[in-house]
Length: 149
Image (cartoon, rainbow, N blue to C red; front, side):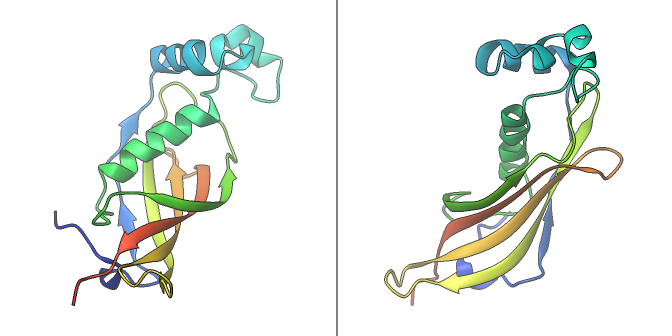
């Protein structure tokens, strides 16, 4: 798929990713390595928390989201390069067996006044589970090149 410059984007465009199935083994491995809290490491410990059962780390969900963005229809020419994050939310936990996908909606396209070769793309990336429930919502401002000429 063709890479896209700032001029190729318009508010209201929606880009979709493929799906990704999350396994219990993956949740446990990520938690052991990067976020070793009991509700990410064992179901019994997690049952007594607000999660009510084993839940993936939010940072694990963010990592999966990044992979899905890179594999999606959303193709900024320089890649997915963040300039500033406005919002990051995890409205519900990711569970073993969840199948995730990302929808990226263009909210605003802003050419740079100080750097004429680039601009900012303000987007909302919503990571959804198999029931179309949001499990993560981020609003990044991405740095995107402008077309030469």
